[in-house]
Figure 1 (tube, rainbow, N blue to C red):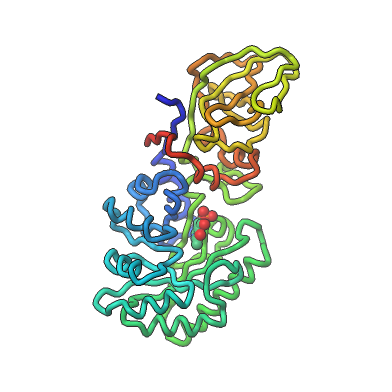
Figure 2: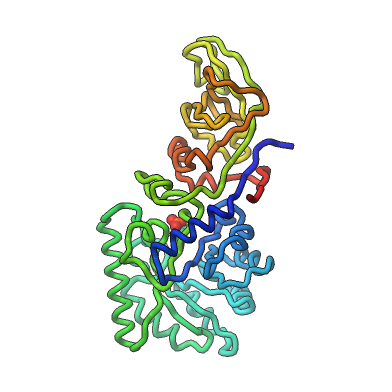
Length: 360
Ligand SMILES: Cc1ncc(COP(=O)(O)O)c(C=O)c1O
C-alpha cells in the first residue's frame, strides 16, 4: 500500500461552517463544492456539511451530487449553454447563475409548470462573468417576466476582497447596492442578494447578503496573504500524510536529487518521503519548504520528484516508516503553498487520484 494518504476531518469542516454562520448570522450558506470540493471530495463534503445549498461550476458537477442523493439546492455558477443542459437543470431543479444573454434566451423555453430559481450576475468590476451594470435593469425585468423563472436574485463576485480597504471592492459594493436598491424601489420587493466569498465573509461585513458563498475558509485555509487560518479561527480539514521510506547518510558537499540543486552544508541525514508531484505535492516547492517528520519541522532538500521528496533530517531521530505531514494538521497548507509560489486552493485542486482519501 502506498503511504501517501489524505485525511479529511469532518469535525473541522463543521467547525469552519459554524465560523461562517457566526460571522454572517441570518445569511444562508452556499458551500462551494466545485472542483471536487477543492480536492476534498464533493460528495463527502456535501454529506458532512449541513449547508443550505452547494455551489458548483457546471452541470456535470451538479448531476454527480444529485445522483449521489444530495437534495439541497445546487447552484451552477457558470450556468448552462444549451437547451439540453437547460432540460437537465429543470429536471433536477438546479439554481442557475445567468451571466449572459444566451442564457436568458434559453430560459424563455422553460415551462411555467417547472420554474427554476436564478441569480442574475452583475459584473461590478471583476470583468470575468456578468452583465454590465447598465444592462442589469433590463435583464432583471426580462427574467422577472419569464413564466419559467420562479425567483431572481442578484449576485456578484469580488476581485480583491482579500485586500483590506480595497478601493475596487468598495466600488463593486457601491455598484451592486445601487442597482439592488433601484430594482427594489421599482418592484416594491426585497431582491435577494449574494456577494461574499470567504475573504468578504471575513473582512467585509457590509457584503452580507441573503446568501454567502464560502469556499476556502470551509476547508480551513486563509484567503489573506498576511493572516493565518489559525488566527481567523479556522481548522484545517485536509491533512496530507506519508511516511519515510529511506533514511540516508550524506557527507558535507554531497548533493541530493535531480539537478543536484541542494548540497549538504555539513554531514547530515536525509529522509526520503513517499510523496511527489505525481501525488500533487507541488514540484515548485523550494528547498526549505517545511515538512513534519515525527511532528517536527524539517526543511525540504532538493527538487521534488514524481514519487518522492527528500528532507534534511539533521540530528532528528527518524527511521523508515516514521510519519510525515506535508500539510494540514500542524503545518498550514497556506505556508506550504507560499513556498511553492501558489495558493492553498491550487495545492488542494492538484491532488491526484492515486492519493487515497480517508475520512475522520
Ligand atoms: C462565484 C464564486 N463565489 C464564491 C467562490 C468562493 O471563493 P473562496 O474559495 O475564495 O471563498 C468562488 C470561488 O472561486 C466563486 O467563483
